[in-house]
Image 1 (tube, one colour):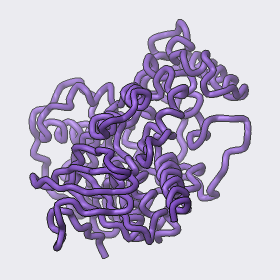
Image 2 (cartoon, helix red, strand yellow):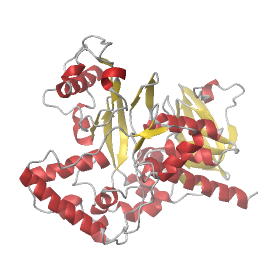
Image 3 (cartoon, rainbow, N blue to C red):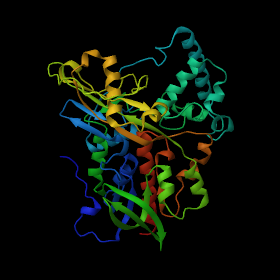
Length: 442
């Protein structure tokens, strides 16, 4: 049964300043994980978009294929997300991507150069030091690499763009060490990485199945198309001003959990102390643009795609079409989850949708000419706040980014690893703080 939220503007009996115990700002995985932990409490979740789940947004096509617009798959270290998926009854199936070597496409000389650099990275990982150590947190990866060939630098820049939505000139050495290899759920160390035992998996039906399940399980009221414009402390509580489809609405809450991107949080949360404003203002994001493409089975062609003009020599797919739904493309069809990350997305961000989707289809057909006359649907989603950068000094600011201000708590993607595991754990952390505060005053 599909989840149907109850928007503020449509709820019977709504008054202009209704009170709740906890207001959660943002219905992404962090916000919904918090709401799930607060099941049984008086919780309202406010979400500006028309869908729940944030970057877990997906669309389903019958039983065989689905489109993911953001979060894709679970590596073996995402134990909390696997636990939540089991709790809500979401189905995990083996990821269909297979094993591939990230240096396979390089020529021999460049591969040797990159392999030596990889050995340097892994040697650094074998020497854990405090996250705030100057040589880790205050040094860009590009400067740590030092002189190298353009081809090797391009390899690392492409990797950083895909994993972190930023350039090697923007990410700190610590950020790379955190995300290289299989230690992406917690700061890297020499200790064994916790494992779910499931291997790499995807959520059958789309990643949104997890967040829809959490929304249902939480029992929280969820108001979509409700954009928060101000969070104002007053008289021991918070007044939250928002707009729901053009209508001004007001909510009062004793506790607020802010799961909004850092720039949005800094804008809407009023009267923050200077240290908090400064910390939030330091966070930078890289955007990405998703164009999932549904391919019909071979025996049910749909005809030629109606192309528009797209840019020549522009990258419209940056993941080599590795990300896709399971199954036999010839027999049951398949959906390719196509993306371009920040460095490529910037160039086409403001282009018309039909130009971007046409560019994506052209790239798909160049790789798979057998799909001519079989492209059935193409989606598009621009994620302005794609992933926060692990920029220089980020780890020194992490405590300030996580710290609450009164009963206003923060669990945005800048407070933890910027992946599904980090979001889920971070939302639960904020909810645990609220629970502890409630117990003190009960």
